[in-house]
Length: 390
Image 1 (tube, rainbow, N blue to C red):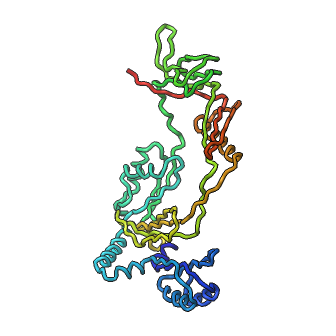
Image 2 (tube, rainbow, N blue to C red):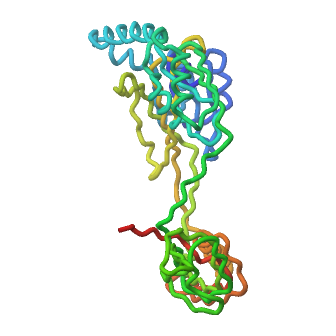
């Protein structure tokens, strides 16, 4: 729909009116109104096709209204600006011819059926097998590509490639049997934090601590070397769990005053086309005066007849304008937020931490709640540490 509007051209107005209802009644018979909204202060936002803008402005003059802001965009606007630049128009004609020729190529690869593998990984596999975007469809030997990929890639068990216009649909099934990760022998288990040992479950390696031992962060818990009965030691690698009583401490600062956004409803748009690595902008954004705005980008490939994907990307950036207001939290609200933040940080560091007890303290200074908390609990403190074999 945005592409259709862009091709026909759109005029967007913010109007000041004494009698909004009479103006709408006078204009709607001759003008195709695209969008219309009324602000609280009586300002009317309205848009119409570019070719009907003069009818709307004539009706506005008769009603005694004024134009607060006006924006126009679309192909007719560009054509009007460029009507004296014949070289650029000739370039556009050549571009259209090139676009028609591009229907002979593959310009988009869509992956279907992958669960663990990312689309980018499958595309890279296809490239190694001799298939990529930009190839002529007649030069693609589908059977050879799929056979080569299935032979070289253990993660894929089945694949088929079908063409729909300039789009290649790649259907695939991933191998169900996952290859085991190679076992590392040059690995010790060390303490991720200070603690008091409660239990050691060493699946492999030599245990270096026992129940009741006090250990420090980085201390060796399970060694990669095990003692042999005949004397000496041998390298086996360390695996297992070491459960300990630990204390995790966190500090959180929560401002009592914070900013919130209130969107004004005003939007600005940037439009451009990307073709063969070059970007052509067809509109200029003019800020309506609001201090701040955030934008969302949208990209879509142009299509002919709904199926043929062209190597032209239509880009649209929507700027949503807003103003900022200051809000204030109560001390209790700030305390609840600080507690929640501290627990989230705890789970980020140690997801298996079982909280047995906790203590907290807080003060309010210079408009901020300063919070400190100690979590007492049980966790697996064993973490792998690789070392070099000499």
